[in-house]
Length: 446
Image 1 (cartoon, rainbow, N blue to C red):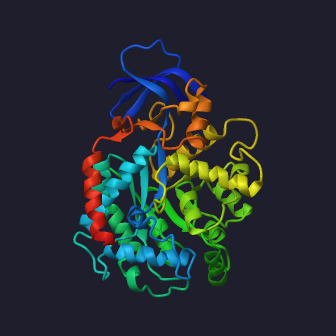
Image 2 (image 1 turned 90 degrees about the vertical axis):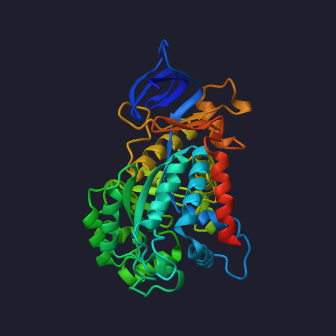
Image 3 (image 1 turned 45 degrees about the vertical axis):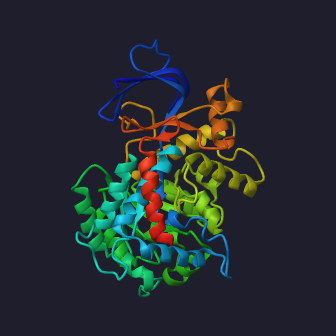
């Protein structure tokens, strides 16, 4: 496929008509707007950069909808017990089809890459697989089946709470020291074909000395992610144990830079958000999961005011498309601020601002040269078919309608690394992946 000929494309400086995009070896070779045409595949609709999903726990999809009742507990900590039960049943043989199905659905929802925050390392009793990276390799196999670009974030998880509390129950299979995680990341990186990063689970699960050891050992090798300030209880416990809230402590003690992704940061202060922006860190926002768990609403205007980088993630995968994630991000802010179009802060189109910034932040957090339609970047594209009510409108309104007016993910075609994975809304291996996933679910939730 030497060239794509797009009716419209979202380029760095805005929407352009008749865009000729060269593709070779999975990369964009040239971009010519207002082209006279020529040989190539005609793409009807609006071509936009693929979205990087910067935070996913694929296994958590298997209990989506099973926690929408209560036996007296209605917060994150009661939800966590359901997560532990699901984690206890997962095996490498079940993990691969779950990852494949989640990856397939993410592609159909406009994501072209995913960063898997991977801490489900060992057997339920805590003993190691042989090889030690077997669960990670199951993720790799599943993502390859789906055709989604993958970054495996190898988890460090040593404690059950602040102060080095011991692990218990289902947490035992999460255990991974800094040195073990670094060795696993090196082993996975040697295989090639997918990205590798480091997942410092949280300040409550990774004591300060281990966090520094892991971060320093991985510095410059790829993205480093950490859950931070997701719940108020976590912030209070961090202040009591470490003398500072999680984000402030990390910025003061962990040499946070542009390789880092601070996931959630829901209860970070405006000052912490501004300091994170100056450090170059990406803020990883997961509105659907944060809403599902009742975590709170991130101070998005503070991030925008500081020109901070941000991206979106599907986290527990209760929602699997980028359009609804961006819509919920913006709508939550509107409810909080009691005004509209928060993402633009002034003149401009809200959906364009959200899509472009989240695509770039997501690409950075995945460690992938993507998120832009420009030479040298990955040929990761989403073709948006205008909704019925948006047919004939200018492309900026078509994208607005896709994010704020769609009743289903409006991604018609999706390309990853120069290869079509979704055509006319259907994944290339839809039936086989669905069948394997149904079989896995029977074993996991029976």
